[in-house]
Image (tube, rainbow, N blue to C red; front, side, top):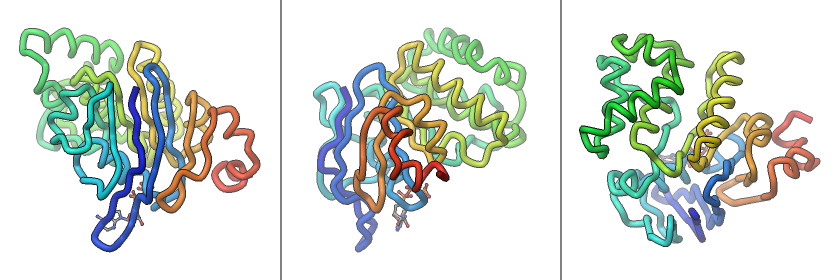
Length: 233
Ligand code: ATP
């Protein structure tokens, strides 16, 4: 189980996250939804070790992660797909994928790569293409594939649908479901609340750095306050 308790994160004098509690059970898809500036990305960056909390704990499988380096957090089984994809321009699709496998023993990397190519056939077709020249949707798949190359037990996805054409948005959500059904636990950060709640077992609504509401995906979809604020109804 993955658990965050009492998490506070500041940028100088700005309190971006103000005491957040949530958990993700093995096998679940859990989503954090909320509008721009709610604190969602700050939470993800803190989990992956890119930011340090001013208070609180992050525990995975009974191991405290709060003070581990980003690389050790990947080693603990948690990989992040960052907001905005951040593929490495000037490197091919294949080279980008291999960057994700730096902790995987060399003799196992081909198997991991084959699995990712099975999952995302377009990445195989485009394996020699400069990542910078892939479409937005293809870059998102590459960012997801690169994270999967680390063989994570828990995958953090920060706004995977952002800026994508509708046809890709549906594809990305379908892929998240598939990745989860194959045994990877998912923490999904999304502004696209409707689709995130539709595929999530549970969700948390983040506003102004706090958890405002939580429940099953279905309960949150049916909640009038969620509908009004996040579902355009
Ligand atoms: P978005 O979906 O727009 O990324 P978010 O919910 O992920 O929103 P955060 O990016 O976590 O929100 O931002 C939370 C708050 O922290 C916002 O008020 C934001 O302006 C502030 N913030 C984020 N990054 C920094 C930074 N590097 N320096 C100062 N303030 C920041």
